[in-house]
Image (cartoon, rainbow, N blue to C red; front, side):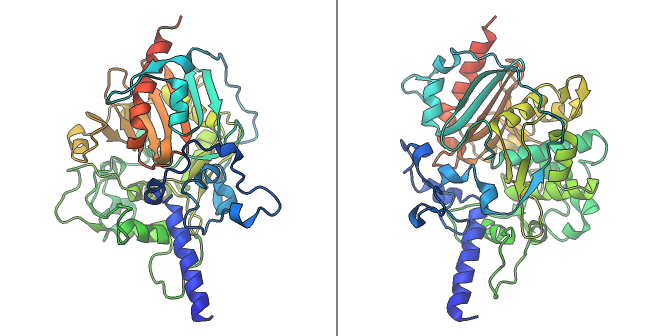
Length: 442
């Protein structure tokens, strides 16, 4: 192999590795998708598509605007995946009672400004789809961009909450001890930062890790993590970890902190939990979810996870599903794990999430837009008077559960800015306004 070919191979591999973690920093650098008719963008149209409208996994900007508007619905065409089987039974029909008034519900964005309607927020937040369920019925459903009722969409870090739900289930069923140290279950992690952390500290992300997830720093650990998770062959001179599991063994402990002291949002915790789940059950997160939930929930489509080079599902951000099937999952959680009289998930698992985590530890992370919140079992808990809690992912992905209002909202989006802080001011008050509207309906 010539030096030129080695360089090209290394560049492609590195680009794919960085893309695997969704490149939130790169996506924040441009806002070119604003106002664009994403449904008519013309990406990947034709046989073959024109070169200037082609998207490849090895493109550095494959998950940045404007390409992101296509990519969020087409991960499976770009990289290897593991299916989450939905079984052979027919899908359970979602009762529908659409309420045209929901789109006109108005609210004031956080921090002030002009009043906005729920329909206007759909557009402002670059939504690809929004589903609202009230008392088990679909009362609002809207699609845009690459999404329709049959399309699978990446949910990014909502995946973490699904992984957390599995973990909480195993704890409730006595199959996983949340007070156990990680190395007791995974001896391979004894020498890593995770070794003397408890399962609970991993699940609540209060582990003390010497690990940077600062995407603006080219030397941050997150880039090594991305390379480890790449499904592509590495360049000849690469001798680092080649899988998510192998990378976890290299994470060092922060000598200036102790486990349990502070919340720190780091994706590697979710993959550590994915390994704990696999070691405790003998199944990957994809297989467990298929057997216990997806095939019994009456979902309309098989879901899938993106995987690394040895087929390990990306437990921190690789899940893809349809809007309606995510609504079914949200409704299951709202119903304390029960479906048609059958307990699919132990109620204790969901109750443990709803009680929230350590608010003082969470406050140390400095989320100014989420005062008094906490993090528990990889779910974000608001501690408001409705008891609302949520699964959240970059670029606007959300499953919002409001027990008092008996409401579930699912939003899939391709917001050009990765951080939820970009959309929270026009999302969180919108969810609350809709909940109050629905509670006033007969």
